[in-house]
Every structure is written in structure tokens, then in C-alpha cells.
Length: 435
Image (cartoon, rainbow, N blue to C red; front, side):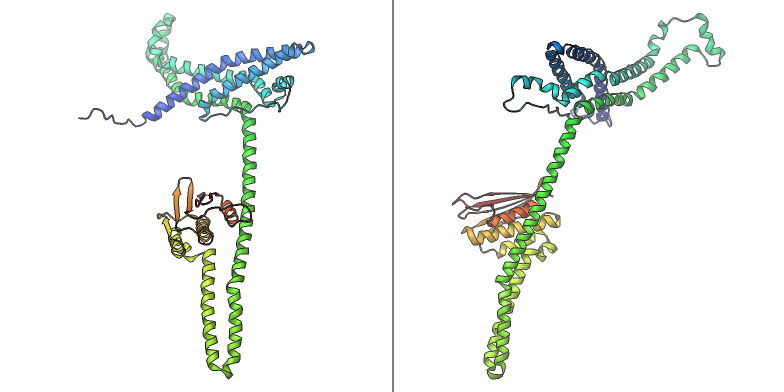
């Protein structure tokens, strides 16, 4: 029999976590009360003496020392409340003197810093939640331990000799048994509610401390994050507008240079054929045949343009099939690494397809590469697309270059793009799109 394998006991992990949290809450409350007495005496005395002696300048260093002392106790309290709240509480950011500030200005910064005043006030008022939590904690622990251990020390309590007959007169049975049952019931009540009460009292004291010592800092952080999110959204909107405008201009140029010119020639050929039909049927037949060729070429160009906008294969069969079709049409040999993945959001698939299509077009036109490698993988952080060639390099994402519009489209989708293109060493285009 294998004695090394110990079967797991259901609920043991939960019980250990509850006991550990109970110990942390109790320790936090029991230490918080004497700390609140110390900070109350120190801060009230230091602030009163400092303000009272400001007129003779002795009070200024006393005030500074009091504020710095309050800052130290505040840092200690932030560290103490982290296990109670179950998360790390960041240290507040205190106001700093600017560049070139003198010694006096630097020394006075704690007095003009709002967070320093909150630290000081917390040290003065923390006695109220600490006293409530300490009183309740002592009461519940005394009730639980005293009630459950009552049978062990009942014999040591002094009693009136006639009191033993009172329970029997009242019909409660033997006096000893009644006392034991009553105190055990009280002990079980306090023990059963001990965890919840300690948790509530510890959270009461910790939330007061968090609100005064870190609340302003967390509020400022949320404001900064909101502003950052707004700026990112505005940048994505601007990039989307720019990418859409560039795509429309490119589509307009492609239509003008390709299908539109062919359609104009087609109309001219058909007009000439109409004129030739009566006088020279053979020439008219040749002109119509040429017009049919123009029609086929125009349809082929229109299909190519439609693939760049919304290829049906991408919608019907997914990203892998669409990229395989792209690689097959590229004039440069493509080494495609695109394993099958689940269908993604339509915007993500469209952006990834557009990135590969535009990158392969640029490789075919400008890179003089002998081979291009395309890799598309789904990572925990998003979809990563890499297009690398062995061409001449020198690609740039600066405005006016071909990759600028591609960067705008990637940014509009919430992704990031990186281009490494040293001269003579090929180009590596890396795009990460969030899922």
C-alpha cells in the first residue's frame, strides 16, 4: 500500500483559509486599538504644541515632525489593511517640490499637502472605529472561549449553598447540568458567529483607514485611467477615420486606373463596332471580340478589388482559408504558418486579412524579396500576425509611406503594429490585435 498518497479531506482548505483570516482579523483589531491610542496622543499633542508655538518659530519644526510622523503611521496602516481587504493598497503619492525649489519650500511641502492632512486626521479619529472593533472583538472571544471552557472551571466559582436547589424548585433539573448547558450554548453562539463578527469589525476599521489614507489617491488614479481611456478612444476614432479615408482614396484610384478606363474603352469599342456593322462586318466582329476581352479583364479587376474589401472566402470559411488564398495569389513565394483557429470577431478577422494582404502587396511591389514568411497565431493576449521578407528593407510607417494607412487601420482596431526594416536586411511587420 502506498503510504505517500494522502487523500484530500473535503473542506480542509476552506477551513484553513477561514481560520487564517480569523487570526488576521483578530490580530489587526487587537493591535489597532493601542496604535490608535498612541497616534491620538502623539498627533493631538504635536499639532497643539506646534500651532501654539508657531509665533516663536519653534512650532514649525514640531508641526513638520508631526506631519512626517503621521505619514509614517499612515504607511504602516496601509500595509496592515492589505491582508484584511484581500488586495494590495497602494501608497499615496505625496506632493513634491518642483525643480530648483529651496530648502524651506521643500521642508514645508508636508504642511501644504492634502494627503498629509488626511494622514494626521486619521491618526486622531481612528480611535472611534478601533474602540468599537476592539470592544466587540474582546466580547466575542471572551464569550466563545469562556462559554466553551465553562465545564473546566465551574467548580472554582464561589456560590451560596442554597443556590444549588433553585433550579430544581423551578423545574429546571439539576443546577450543575443547567449551568453547563446554558454556558455551552452561549459559547457555541459566540463561536459560531465569531468569524462573521471579526470580519465585519476588521472591515469597518480597515475601510475607514483605506478611505482616508488611499481614497484620494485611488480616485486620482481612476480619473487618470479614465482620461487615458478617453484619449485612446479618440486616437482609435481618428485612426479609423484616417484608415477609412485612405481606403476610399485607394479604392477610388484603383477603380479610376483600372475598371473605369476599361469601361470607357469598352463603350468606345462598342460604338465603333456599331458603325462598322453595316460597312465591314468582319471588322465589327473583331471589335466585339476585343470588347469581350475587355469585359473579362474588367470583371477580374473588380473581383480583385472586392477581395480587398470583404472577400467572400473570409466570411464563409474563415481566416485560415482566406490567407491561404492570398498566399496562392502572391507573386513572391509565401511560407504560410496559420494553424486552424476558432472563428474570431469579424472586425478582427477583417483587420488581420487586410494586414496580410497589404503587406504581401508591398512585398511584391517594393521589397525585391525572394521569399516571404507569414505567421498568424492566437495567443492569450490576442491575435499576433507576423509578415517577414528577405528583401531590401527600408520600409517606414511615417506619414506619406505605404504602411501609414495600415498602422491607422490596426490602431482603429485597438491593436499595435511594429515594423523592423533595416536597409538590406528585409522587413518584419508584427501586428497584435486584441480579442
